[in-house]
Length: 162
Image (cartoon, rainbow, N blue to C red; front, side):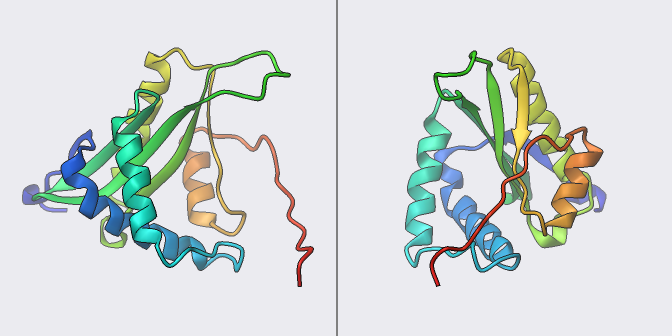
């Protein structure tokens, strides 16, 4: 990155929706590459637009973007989660999305977005911050390990429909 490629980190706004949807579609394509399990609907862009709009407006979420020269090149979405009522309630934040445009990866943007999510979790006095990553997404799993996540739970999948 050159000096003119300065990255600005800020909360997402409704004006960001077209660029966020474009990145969300790219993220879905990226996830599809790991497994046939990750199939997306034909109306993906419309669904993402509605979902992102809701999360931008939510008081229980942090939606942050990385922007350079007016272009959104990455985003992180974190949401406050509540466990099912049989458990003692702990305040948890899920990092549900962290995506950087391919040409901007390995430049510290993911770490900065993550640090904003971690700050959000601390500010709301969360007990835990958690994230899920596809078992074949080694770059994501390596990144999350480098920023302090530890394995906690494993989901096993069995195809029952042929």
